[in-house]
Length: 633
Image (cartoon, rainbow, N blue to C red; front, side, top):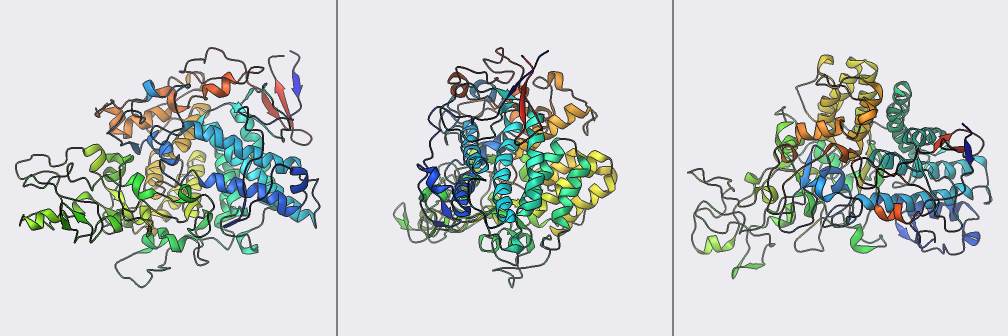
């Protein structure tokens, strides 16, 4: 067969995504630049770095704002479901709702299409830098390669996510200068091979935090962390161990095992608390930080979208007195702050300032909030760090005015006769990691979570990635050592033996350690691909293959095993919770396919349009950015 080679000269776009229309910031300080005249802007290190700051900003938006996209990564996994019960639209009945032409970019539904759209925005910014790298004037090769390496990182980070979210996607490696409508899907594995090559360059040339890289910018450790994930996805286990070792053994980073930061002298706290307090994340003493999203009220440029809103999204809707009754049958709670009137009486017990006004949008399932916590000494589930609904009290001031005996007493789910007191246990009754989700919000009377930093990459995950690489190699004792390093730091006394280590125990530890840090769906799908490609049995002895991945995969089996809502088809007011095997890969947005009138972007199996399949292109290494080979010609 004669294969046609394509020169990679175009960036995928959804019609009008072709123009530069962004602002940049000097990490935290806004400094608008003109992107309408790139020939005047991208001529030196400062100009090219401005494009990469746009990548930093857009990456940050995954964790910030109302209905942030990271919720979608969690509700399409084993740890959580959509908890909004008062309206139609939120993603619960996945086979019925998750379709290519649905509204899949809405805070009230899901953010699947956000990942596609914003991912290709960031690819556009990165490719502009890559294509213009030798147009700029440079003081040294090291300066040039540092900027180029950061651009490679941003592009590879997007493609790592897209290939685990959507599978085969268009691979775009150069700046676009005119509209293009002839794009083609590219093999997932070959995209990852290109990412590996680029990240190896980045890990060599990008500077370290110790060399003065600003907190919030990309550094060498971040490149090695992402490279470890890509190495795992490619079954390069020794390479994954080596790239993880490059961080763990660099003499700069280490797990934080001793008290530090603002509450260091408070004997009621512990190192797990210290690690996740917003002011501690950016201080020099914190050597577990690898890559940090930074957001400060006085320095961010797009207002409300930079508020982290964690308490609103992930804390239960505890403040509804109509949903949480006292055993005497009265409205029990209010989420108004101290001094505000409720029912004509001032609030005296303030629970909204310390815990936030949650709406239960990201609802952890029993697997996450209860079942995985098997060690009573684990700081991550200890009183004060972890909040249970029973730790709250009935604080409605009307109760006090009426002389009700339940005023000020701890909340209860059942009365003495076994009657349930919460009328919406999906949205309004579950535990949560207060130590991680609390972000002070002093400008809001009913705090959602204000401006604050958040970990993008942290050394705790690097240890768990290395543990996984050891497990794939069969070095289970080394894997156990890495998992136990995380557990010991958290105060655990129950440690894993080599014989207990498998993907399940690693996923359990990731769930304990990395809630709302890891993109959970992405990582489980990566593991699903790896099991299908390798034929290695999972912890239940089951094997998989790529030939029927959409019908039989580890992502679905893991979700059904651990997520009781999907497994048991729990009935909510508007939907029944259901999952399906093909949702291991999300649907490619229909408008991306339909507007690509001169090419073919494949739809994933299980969705309408999948029958219009064309064998994807394949990237091969070569001069410059390499080549795309079309097996159809």
